[in-house]
Image (cartoon, rainbow, N blue to C red; front, side, top):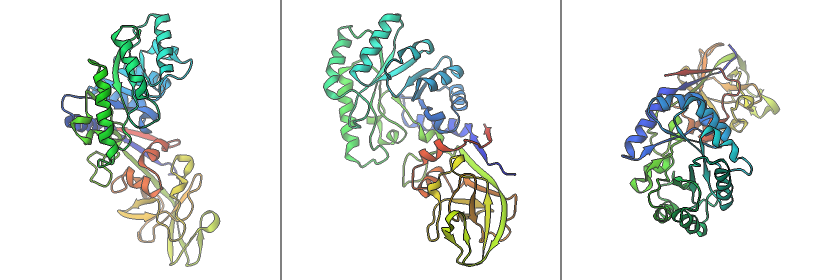
Length: 364
């Protein structure tokens, strides 16, 4: 009665990748499964996607790469966050490929490959405008020359960069990055290229290159903010009502009494809070519409503060609402992007925070 249920639709993730793959023609459609596959469960996502033919996966840390390797023994697995000092030994035994983004990364990987005589395949990340990870343009030529001279010591299997504002197709930075990445690729003939993330796929063929790396869209996030979401929903979160009570006008609800009933109201309490990853920023004091749930087909607002384990819903407009009825917090019209907006954040954060205590049920 008290537990939320988080339903993960693996078939929807598979369908979303197929849909994106159709948009990129001959380019390979990989899958980003970092952050526990955006909160949906890394092993389950990798297993389902690999069974459907996905050959390449991206994670953020070697520990995630090891988890992916255990369920996809033949996959190519790249580790996006570069090569942290002293960690090269975490990659080789598991056939993980680091994404090298600095001269220091490259030097350390060279030393490791030379000492172990492993093949040492790796990606190289070139910075085209993010100014975060990635080789600065001034370093591109040196690495390219060492590759030509066969003094690099390892094979570059992928050249990649990261788009800054792909979800804003009219942003000028997109065209500049596409042009900059084309310049970088010209220095590395014969090396596969990868630029597009989920939203980048929709920028068109100039962003596709040889491999695209969708993440958020695989898990139901909208890669086209402001437009109809072309992706299938993957996550559904529902919680039964614990209690329904009548509240008089002027009565306060929740911690610090931030929500005051302005009419005779019915308040339902559910066992869901920020300890479950349902963000406190979705709290709704009087006059503020923030987090929501659907009860009996009616969208009901949160009333007052979201606490650690509980929150309150104003179910006044659902006269028959009763203990045990389902409140759906993600699903249907409450897609992950709307839930994020209601909490003053983005759907990415909602996905990756959910499920710390939720029973999970996978459907296929």
